[in-house]
Length: 85
Image (tube, rainbow, N blue to C red):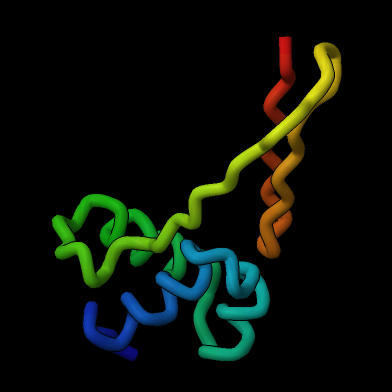
């Protein structure tokens, strides 16, 4: 089945924004992982207006001790760990 960017980009954005995993989006939309990866690659290369960019929310950390770290865990399973020196 042929799909357009207008059909696929909203699906890809749900993954990029951490709303759902690749597996659940593929299952829900009857996509193979290869087709999903193709569109993710295409999405990442496409110029987008600010309206299509993910929103980031600034956070403020008042106090953290040396030797501790900040850990950010996204809903898609990605973890970011920032050690504090």
